[in-house]
Image (cartoon, rainbow, N blue to C red; front, side):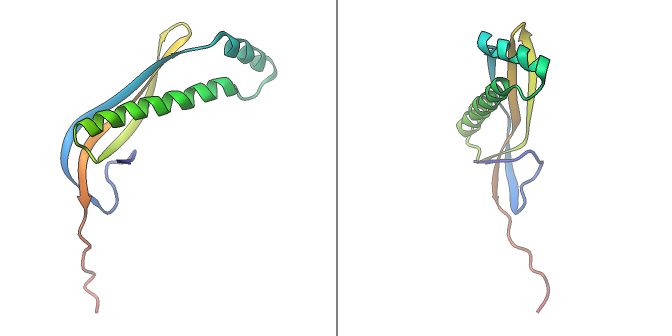
Length: 114
């Protein structure tokens, strides 16, 4: 499955648009990570626990989006985007969406040179 955040895929032609495909996950913070984050707020630095949580969340949301695209018979997803929103105190949703399409190789154009 080809996944891009652009409207087009170089060398490919979109032959069919299957529609919006999406995936999401809602994750809650872990109390241990909150304590570590509070300390980092005082001394500064990367909140590695939250970074790992976001990486896992993006993977899960994208995996769910790709599963939906596969169910629709897509072989590519274009215009992929991520969004987040707060669900409740301590929990957030990570949402991944794009346009499921069918693409095929674009025929090479003759250059006209000999």
